[in-house]
Amino acid sequence: MIIQQNPSGTVAIRQQDHAELAAFLLEHWSDHNFPMNPRRDDIILATREHDSGWQEFDAAPPIDPETHLPVDFLAVDGEAAQEIWRGSSSKYLEINPFAALLITHHAYAINEASHRRDASWKPFFTEMAQLRAELRTLLSMTQNEVESSYSFLRMADWFSLAVCMSHEFGMEKPDRYGGYLSRRESDSYLFRPFPFDDRELRYELPVYPMREKGYKSTTEVRAELKKPVKQQIVLNQLERFAK
Image (cartoon, rainbow, N blue to C red; front, side, top):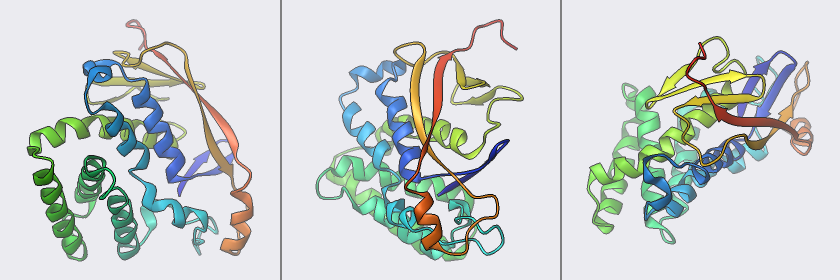
């Protein structure tokens, strides 16, 4: 669960809804000849499913004893997080090894950046690296080829996660990632260069308003997770004269 603070209060966003937004971005991604990429559909599938291991956790999230809100995904303890990532990685092993490879690589890469010095994560990294190598061999792919396909997932994941985590993303100053500049104006996220196949792309992100005083139990919060509000997101071009 992603917990976002904004001027009107606190909202929770399910990891799967964040992943759906990331997949939507790639469905409309036109840069780097992506529409002609022979693995396009599988890359989009991997993007949509890269956080699928979080579904059960997000359906009944534990309550943080300090905030009385659902535990934010960044605060989940290491052992539980590793099991969640294993679930994401294993789902497509039999039915789509390529998607499983990208998800496994993501599980390794995204956590290695923040936990590489934590000894309790070492067995997880070893396991993911071995599985990644096995899948890469099965598919006769080089690591550079994996990285090339993964770059699309990572870009979409970065933007979607940034939007979901912070209401202020791109508001005070444009953010840069992967050669793209992104700025927020009201409900619009403006890009330069513009990587999508159409202007004024619109998406409705389900968010779950949280009670100001929080919750006493998972049972209480589960009732709130049946009542999403749609947050509108508009994708448009950032003009060259914009500051």
